[in-house]
Image 1 (tube, rainbow, N blue to C red):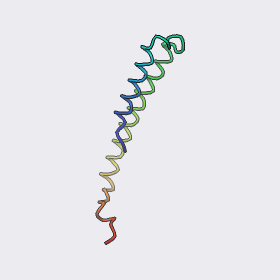
Image 2: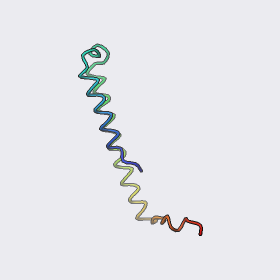
Image 3: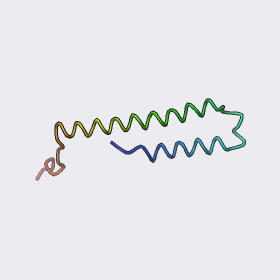
Image 4: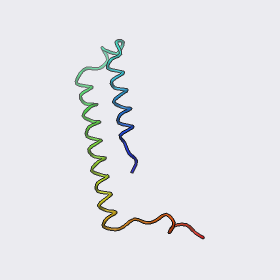
Length: 72
């Protein structure tokens, strides 16, 4: 599973830029930003749990080596 930290950081950076832009002050409220920050936090926690579940599955069933899949 791909790491989402970089994508989450980019999202938070864009939200920060948007929030600091003077011309967009009237478009979004503090509540809108709270929702975005909560979304980023929850998605990070879900990704972490999925990663841990994947590791447990690897322990239980093993991992297929890519060399085994090659046709000679």
